[in-house]
Length: 224
Image (cartoon, rainbow, N blue to C red; front, side, top):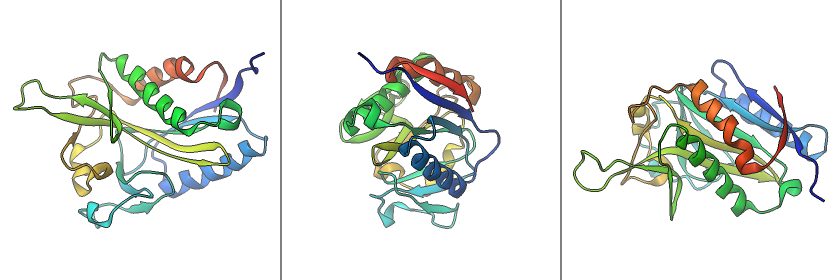
């Protein structure tokens, strides 16, 4: 018999959320989920401009160290940018209950992004050896070009996940110039608006909500 659908809180945070405050809140919630006192959480936030350094970040990939605040973080990956116009989704799920398979979990995050982008007729794709989701930009450009539209960086503590993903909706793409995003210099970054789509955060939020259970299974969702 399959277990009953998990209780999951879906929270959209208004305004800009400080990065330190977000990490502290996630760590508290991870402990509460692990100890059985809180439901899982999907937390959608928007940050002020900042760079984060994952556990694999290389110092030489921080090209402009004084441009924005830089935060060392325990998530996997290298340098990434967060800022206004980018939807950051913190995903706090209990993998002990859902299945303790980290590789499958990352694959599911990728699938979730791909399905959400498809709601706007955008084809997001995986690439071997490159974390995140990519789109083809060959049309109208010389040669072959691919740009990154979404980043993934996760951490797991006693099989409870946190950190998550970031989808570029309408950030200032010039802000990525201060880093080598995810350590990949030979490709660029894009956003839904850069692709010519009149899309806002509310639109991607609705797409993420409508595709969540397609990927992660039934959930008893409550508004946070």
